[in-house]
Image (cartoon, rainbow, N blue to C red):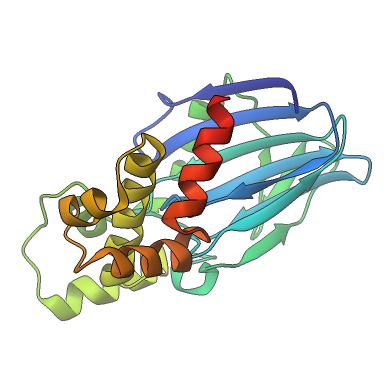
Amino acid sequence: MYASREQRNDVHPLVQSVSRTIFSQTGSLQFLPDQCWDITFIRNRHGLTVLRTGLTTRPVTYDFEPGDENFSIAFQPYAFMPILPGERMRDEGVVLDTAGPDRFLLDSDSFEIPRIDNVEDFVSRLLRREAVTSNTLVASITHGAPLAATERTVQRHFLKTTGLTLKTYHQIARARQALVLLRQGDAPAAVAAALGYADQPHLTRSLRTYMGMTPGQIARASSSDRT
């Protein structure tokens, strides 16, 4: 599937990860909700596409062909882009204008398309031009040490920055934890109990809603991957 694949997780506090993939065959991938938003640079036979996507609440299918390149920067949920706020971008994607083969536009600002080895400089430029900022209240919540604020203030900041309610954010986080445990081979009933689901059907509904799979489908896929 991959002609080459690189990933970095040490880029910047506002960045969860960076990945660059060149595909060797035709196929498709399912991108699951990961509680990040992305700027993705896609190069294929149609040319260059720069895509800004928001946090997702359901799987997204990505189709590719041999030679296609996908270079994606996954930003932390507390990173905020004022011209495309999270509340506008939930489950959405916006194609950004390009300015030649190596630059793209954010509002009236032009940015050079980064490489995987200089993403730090790219993020620093975004911050200097205030194209991206950090919401400290949302950051404190996602880090598990919330700053003092009223519930109304928390909900307002969280929705504007991430596009999700705090409840939905936590539900997705729990579904992601469940996915990891089920892929390890843990029994669905044990996973439901460990993560505080009311019962196994509650776990199943959550996984179907956010990950597009049932515990049985996850177990079968994991078993197939190991054989």
